[in-house]
Length: 365
Image (cartoon, rainbow, N blue to C red; front, side, top):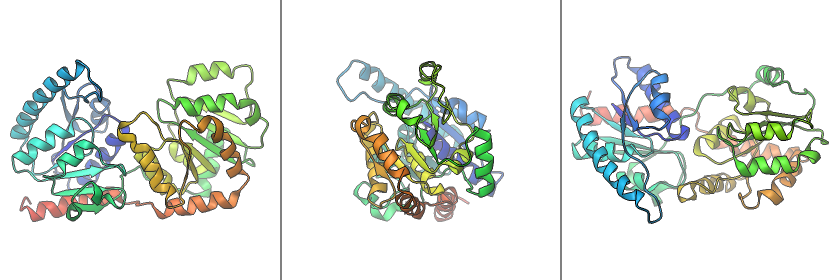
């Protein structure tokens, strides 16, 4: 099988989870990844134990620029290289998880009569997946009502594969000790992705004098890009109830200790929030294609499973809403219950069930 896509962790993690489940069921399965040269998958996939080939494909600019000429030339080259990869590897199935590389690979696979499966993580389908859906055999989605983007008869609700995170009293105690937290004060987990979120960070910094006087504690992942700057600004204050770090490697423990989360609205982050049943305030990033983070967040808000504040409004509203929720445990509990209802914990297995069914249906076994 070929699994293609990447560019962000939101595409890479589901791809690895699907591959791991395939190998768990059949150790002899041959899996080849195809990604974009220079993107993070070229390191993350080999680190997970899989082979990967890269294409020189990149995203087209949404405004007129001469760079798009280079993008189009690279796309033509990528289609040719994808053709050679498919002829040499001869996959039985091609799986696309989103990202630049999935377009050329799945287009060429379908042209060669190879069955294709799409995995759409977001509540708003991207242009590439919409185009690829015409030839796809199965489309695995994480949200309901996706027939406005895809043929209804091809859609299967599987959720997004995410790391399995267990919530328990034992892990809560471990997390409090691990992060050096105070046992009796409620904990707010603030995350903005591995690189950080400027709006969230700036708002936290601006209100730091207020926050350090509250009987709460904040576990704050600033992101690597902002960490040194924020650390320098806090060097003289050193608030005891605010714990900053550039990156949280033990997110399982962070989810365990969180009474409330403040987060961007990437598809995988939202799937983990639902899996762990956490109350959350979502501040969607405005800097993503087709504003899909806002649409992801609205899907939770419509089920009363989260609260959304736009990036533009965060400066005036985020901290006030955060404190309102900390003063209202019943509201937090309702958000947590409703988010948990949206969880699909066995997503990778459901997707590979569809892979197995397609293999049987196409007579590939």
